[in-house]
Image (tube, rainbow, N blue to C red; front, side, top):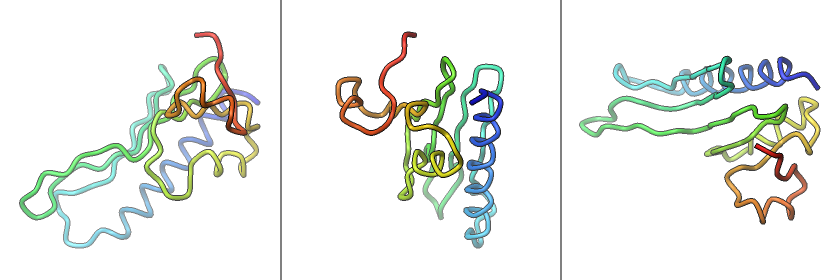
Length: 117
């Protein structure tokens, strides 16, 4: 599958999740869910930033990279599991690297393992 198609899938999923989170926010003028799309370096993030009451709140929900034609999931803070969603969209499991697992553990998953960096 083409890298450009993977970029489109990732942008679609992150944008969809941002929209869903935005609809759920109430009375949060200084709180938002943001998407970051770096198509030149192939880094993609969904994060939250702002204030909840008098407490600063910032964190990464999803972080994906595309390296050597494969999707590397660096962080997945969702219940659904972004890898499963990508598979539903047609991405072969061997093209999805669960980078949040140490390299040895990856071989025991049904997803891709290492590629030469």
